[in-house]
Length: 326
Image: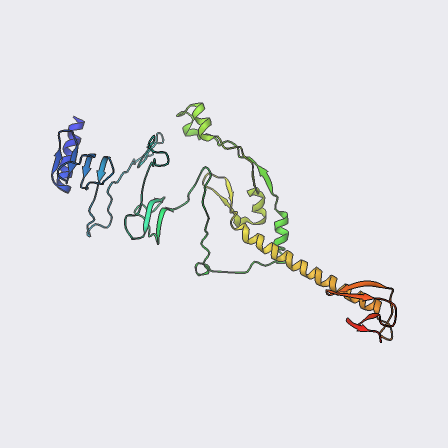
């Protein structure tokens, strides 16, 4: 009875929207196209896609009087919080075909217009403007429970996107950036196995839980978020799960600034040392008459090697200049 009602409803809606329903001798169904496609079990308003076999093939011609068009719309929802089970808008599990070419979900941009092959959001369910062409675009916090591999990671940094811009400088209250970097405690660590959520403990076996919630035991290097929060609180974030995370990317400019401060301190020390050496050399080689002979040796001042020896043609330093004894 349920199947009959469903079939009747499907045919009524489909006939209204797409026109004629056709069924061939093999049970293949076509709605809005004639005849049914040989490579498709159910075809709705779509044409033959060469090289593909379909359980369901759907095509929707865009119409100007519709602001939103969806070839397939899947919603799993309830008016009350059920609190058990799982819900999935789309579920795909392919496999055992050509290795490297099995996709749970395949999405792409089939035009020159901007957009995203896969769009994920937590709030804007009708989408947001995408200013480019992306394989994936995520509008909201995104979490990965394992390794992410990429050729590069880009953080938006155009000055036109920024306000309240200030150069990072040392202050009497905060101290130098270098001092703060030296306070950071670099640690090595391994991740604990994740705790099994209470809601899932009765739904999976112990073996499956151990496999799903175990973490790789390779060694990592980093900082304690709690300790860093005392030094740079803006680099520490509290996740929706209640655990702290560190923005390591923005540590890079801080490290650059600390190197600049270290270079500045080194330059100041070098300059002071050079001045002291020059002053000592002048005092040793100068006399009340402006000249004083010193034992034979070799001195270096500001990159000039000066050979000093006894005799009428020896060299002397006077007021920081090399002069011949005549």
